[in-house]
Amino acid sequence: MNINDELINKLQRLASLEIDSNKLDSTKQNLSEIVNFVENINTLNLDNIEASFNAIKSELQMREDIPYNAEVRDLILKEAPSSEDGFFIVPKIIE
Image (cartoon, rainbow, N blue to C red):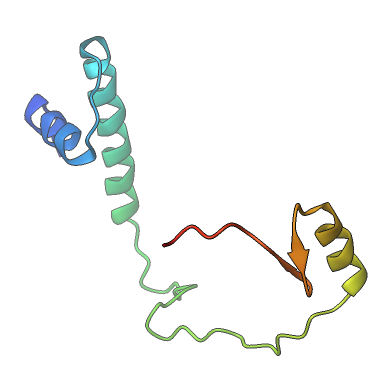
């Protein structure tokens, strides 16, 4: 993939950022190196390697949500500006 001025301008617009004109050449070179590295990864033969993560078959391990070690909770809440019944009290932020 060729990283040119047109692509840099598009990326700046999409990312809502501005690259200094004196850094444009180094930015183009860095992006080209990144793209080339990813293209090299795409050439690897991974046919016999099983995926370590599959989002489709993902199952979360569930555990019972049991609080433990109330002493730690009490130590933490002691440092809070305001707490009640084992919970932090915070100011209301939504009207």
